[in-house]
Image (cartoon, rainbow, N blue to C red):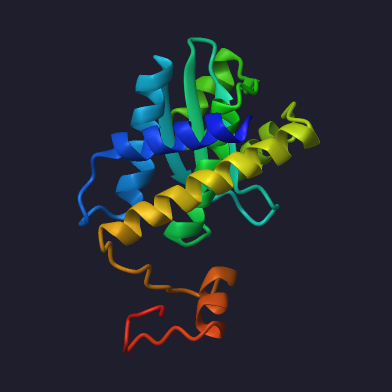
Length: 184
């Protein structure tokens, strides 16, 4: 995707968020999917699910009845989940082709009883090339920078790390102090 087109796309997406400074990262995730659905005229369903420890962090697929499903792991912080979602959205924006699911698997994807093992099997069937993955990473990076700038301009509260994941350990290593709640 050309830089100028990407900047225009990113600016439009941020402008259309229409969220106030009380919006949580979770709110931003769901609003982004709603906007993408409106832009593309398709039903996009976002789910957060435990995808296990097999390395799978996000997945985008389309059912036979043209419902687009994005699943993002719950094993990460909300900011990390947002970045994973942005990567999946970037695939859409780049015009990449999602994995098509048959009726049975598609039906199971829309319900919360889908096992981590099944998701891993489905993700192994993705047709994304390395070039497409790199392109999605680039687009997601631009979107993330735009979102973080949007949040900064609206004085959105800082991400308060919790848990023992890599993002939290990095945050503390960079000097975050829970008593100060600042990142400067």
